[in-house]
Amino acid sequence: MKKTLYLKFIFAYIVFGVLGFIIISTFIPTMIEEKLLKDKADALYREALMISDNYATGLYTSETSLETVKTNLDSLSVYLNSEIRIINPSGRLVMDTATPLNVEKEEIIENFDPTVTGSSYYVISNFFGNFNSEVLTVLAPITSDFKVKGYVAIHNDMTEITETCNELLIICYITLVILIMLSLIILYFFTEFVYVPLKKITYATEQYASGNMHYEFQVDNEDEIGYLAACLNYMASEIARSEDDQKKFIANVSHDFRSPLTSIRGYLEAMQDGTIPPELYDKYLGIVLNETDRLTKLTNSLLTLNNLNTRGMLLDISDFDINRIIRDTAAAFEGTCRKKSLSIELILTGDEMYVSADIEKIKQVLYNLIDNAIKFSNADSTITIETHEKKNKLFVSVKDEGIGIPKEDLKQIWDRFYKSDASRGKDKKGTGLGLSIVKEIIKAHHENINVISTPNEGSEFIFSLPKIDLEED
View 1 (cartoon, rainbow, N blue to C red):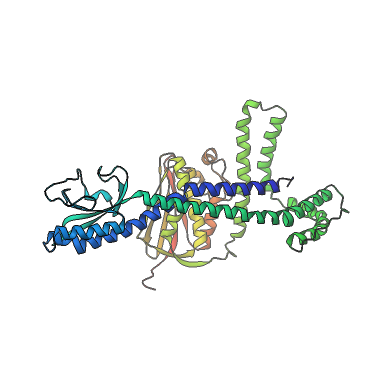
View 2 (cartoon, rainbow, N blue to C red):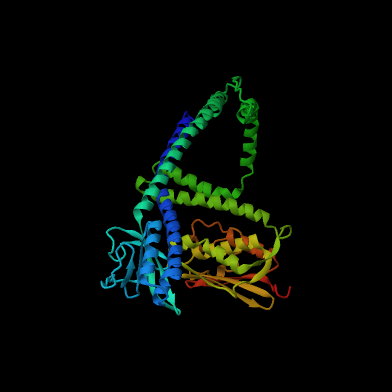
C-alpha cells in the first residue's frame, strides 16, 4: 500500500466529480436535445397530419374555403406557438399563418424539395433560406384521390427547445453536486472503517515480514477487516508451511521447461558479462520474450492435454448448428487477420447444419486449426472454411494459402511437441501441441481428421462429424 491507497481513493473521488461534469456537459445536452426534438417533432407531426386530414384536404376538393382554413390554422398556430404553412408540390405557398391571406400575390419557395426530411418526418434547417436561423420543420402530405396535392409544414423556433434543454441541464448539474456532497459521507466511512484499520494491518504485516512475530495490534471493527486482523497471527504461522508447499510445486515442474529456461538464462548471462554487445540487446531480448511466450503456451497446452485422455475423456454431446460455431470462431480472428492482411472465406452448406458432438471441444478444434492457418499464411491471402455433406457425415475443411507442410513431416505433425523445420522459422512462439489437441478431440468423438498439403501452396485440414437431420427426429 505504501501510504498511497487513501490518495488513490481521493483521486478516484475527484475523477468521479470531474468525469461527472464532463459527461453531463458533453453527452447529456445532446441526449436531452435529441429527446426534446423527437418529442416535439412527434407532437407537431401529429398536428400536421390532423391539419392535412381535417382542413387542408378540403381546399383541393372544394369542400372548404381558403379563408375558413386560414382562420382555423391561425388559431392552431397560436396554440402550438409555431408557424403553419400549406405548400404545393411545386413550392408555391398556398397559405402561411405568419402573413395575411393574399391570393393575388404568388410566393414561391425556391428549390423546395419535399424529400428534404429523408427517411424521417422532420428536419432542422433554415427551410430553403426562408428563415434567418434554424427551425424544426415537420412535413405531412396532403392527399386526395390517392395523389399528393400538397404539404402541411409546421415550423417551430429552436429557441424554445434550447431553453428547455438548458433548464434540464441545470437540474442535472445541481443533482450531480448534491451527489458529490453526499458521497463525502462514503469518504468519511472509508477513512474510519477501512483505511485506518488497514493501515494498522499493513504495519503488522511489515513487522511479521521482518521476523517480529510477537508484534500485537488491535482492530475494534466487528466486520471482515476485524476478522482479518484477528486471523493475521494465524496467517503468519502458516508462512513457514507455505514455503514447503512452494518447494513441492517447484519440484513438480515438468522437465519440458528446461530448454526455454536454459535459453533465457544463457542470453541474459551473455548480455550481463558483455558477450552480447548492447547494440544487439533488442534482438536477443526479443528471443527471450518469445521463449517466455513459449513457456506460457506450453503450460496451457500441457494442462489441456492432461485432460484429453480418450479413454477417460468426458464428452458433453449435444446437437448444435456447426455453421453458427464456424461463423463465431472465424469472427474472433477478425483483428488478427486485419493485421496480417488476411481474409477468411466461409463456404457453408445451408443456413443451418446440425451435428452431434461436444460443442466446446469442437470450438477448440476450429480455433486451433484457424490459428494455425493464420500463423502459416502469407500476407494478402485467403483462408477458406468449407463444409459439405456425405451420407450421414459432415466434413469441415480449413484451408490456407501458406507455406505448406513437407511430405516427410505429414505423419509427424500430430505428435506432441513436433514442429517441422519449415514451421520453426515462421512460428517461433508455437508449442507443437495445437494439432495434438485437435487429434485427441476428434479421436474422442470416434471421427477422423486428415491433412492435404503442398509446400509453398498451402495446407487443408479436413475432419468429420456425425450429421443430424432434425426433420427426421
